[in-house]
Amino acid sequence: MPVMPICSFARRTSSVTYLATIALAALLLSACAERLAPAPALPTVTPPAADAANLAPADLARGQQVYFDKQCVACHNAAATGGVGASLAGTTLSFEKFLDILRNAIPPKPAFNEVELPAQDAYNVYGWLQSLARTGSTAPAPTPELAPGTVLGMTLWVGGRCDTCHGAFAQGSPKGPPLAGVSDTFETEQDRMRQSAGTIPEHGIQVMDDATFQRLHQWLSGGADPESGC
Image (cartoon, rainbow, N blue to C red):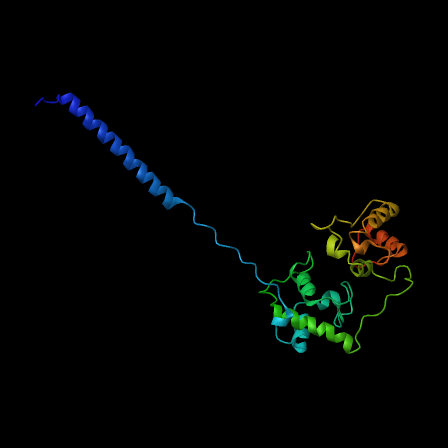
């Protein structure tokens, strides 16, 4: 029987060892990759919108107390008939819209999360505000003709819902540009406003006529002082 040369046997042994080492390394790398693979992301769950049907009946006394505790009275006054802020007495907003405004108010208006103002307390406030119309505390009707300087510019500002896009003090927001100190002429702003009325109903003449808008423009161009008239 022929004897294999020692050098040939060594080369064959070395080749087998080399291949075995590569295979083992491949297995180890595969196992490590499986261990290091990121865990699948957990599905996101969108919390259901607050539904008045899922809440207890509004506690009107509690709603009034929360209204005062949260300092709503500072802008909307004690009877919720408006001041710096809009009238809220006898609101015709749906509760869902009312809650959305509370949760997503544009600064410097306060916005309240669920911890700061639970949905049930928001519903209590909402119920109390609605009850004001039934007890005769309705907001006064708009004055047909406004005497110069006797109406706060802020009253027209929030009454026309301009604050919902341009901020409580016309300082601007992601929804609309700042208008405090506007330098464009009344005619330019008027054209710009009316041209967008198709997509922004508040810009329509039915919501704010030209005479009222001219006075509001004068107030804005003067710096939109919350305490000044127009």
